[in-house]
Amino acid sequence: MGTRSAGRLNAHHSAAAGLIQAHATGSELSWRAPLEAALEQLPADRRRQPRSWQPAGTAGLQCTTPGSGPLLDLASNDYLGLASHPALLEAAGQALQHEGVGAGASRLVSGGRGVHERLEEALANWLGRDRVLLFPSGFQANLAAVQALADRHTLVLADRLIHHSLLVGIRASGARLQRFAHNQLSDLEHRLQRARAEQPQRRLLVISESLFSMEGTSPELVELSALCERYGAALLLDEAHALGVLGPCGRGLGYGVDGVSLISGTFGKAFGSGGAFLAGDALVGEWLLQHSGPYRYTTALAPPLAAAALAALKQIQQHPERASQLLERAGRWRDRLEAAGWPRPPGCGPILPLLVGDNSRALALQQQLEQAGLLSVAIRPPTVPAGTARLRLVLRHDLPAGSLELLLRALGTP
Ligand SMILES: Cc1ncc(COP(=O)(O)O)c(C=O)c1O
Image (tube, rainbow, N blue to C red):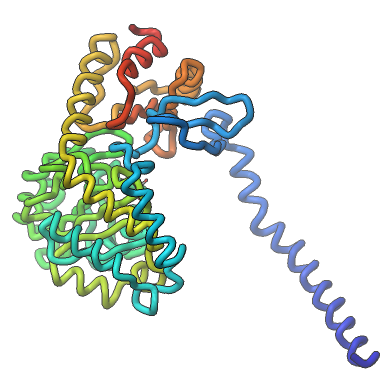
């Protein structure tokens, strides 16, 4: 390069550096300050500190911090213990060898694989729905689901405690949102009635979950769907925590219920894998395929995860006793916790929240359990409403005998 051009380049460089400098100083003032202020204001008992874990034996997790011992896993959503099941490891390993790690492109470009089609077909048959579409995560599937069923002219009536991803989807759709009291169908009906009276032709969407992840509760689904049908509202049901565990042979609470328009499921929980899907009728399936940004503009689900999810589905189909044993265990744990003086955790699934109220007390209880060799995480606002911090106990199928007694001793209420 000649000196003249090198000089010009240097001049450009220093001019650009000056601009960047000036811009950085200006933008630091405009965008860093609110973040710093918000972080400074965050109370210590609401601050999150991620830790890393590795599986340790059956139903165990070990923190990677030096000096930590293995803890019994009462925190993750691997309800059936499938994440490390040999059938899933084998399926994911085979897919890894033959299909590669990633799909390399969107499903509508060149990212589609045979395993995606097999998984979609198997899920559609299992759930009795026309069409299943895969997504890289449940968060994304929920964005797609809401956007399929709502636009800016729609009124969405959502349970007060729905998952954050659904709220983000509602916001992205531009729809108006009203929230009804948690699982209170009379409140929902009142709102449906009013909405129909005000605008008879308005598009209505009701959103709920079949097992609320922080509450352990479920709606009366048959009544809920009948209400939606009566008022001409679509019903989106997030079955993330129910699939594999609740409903006939783990098919979820929406199985066979007519008024459920669209089901959202994830492979990140009872399926022990990762990724997600939406299941609906042919019309909604085709609409998603033709119009959904979250489906179209993302790399297809990694083939090893899809293969593991398919293997998990086979396990769930071949071993329905795992879910029923888990639910029996959940019933026994509820009885014993209640007998020990705790408010009975609501619902009947594997999520048993112990309501504590105060954030610091919930954190202290988490530590108390860790010292006794148990991992259960304190859930605090904003994940749950202020003043309702809780210890979220999650049961798994493969917990060793004596786990409940260990917990009761750790809680100081044997
Ligand atoms: C109710 C519910 N829906 C959706 C999701 C998102 O699923 P994924 O973890 O696959 O993104 C979660 C996970 O936290 C959830 O609890």
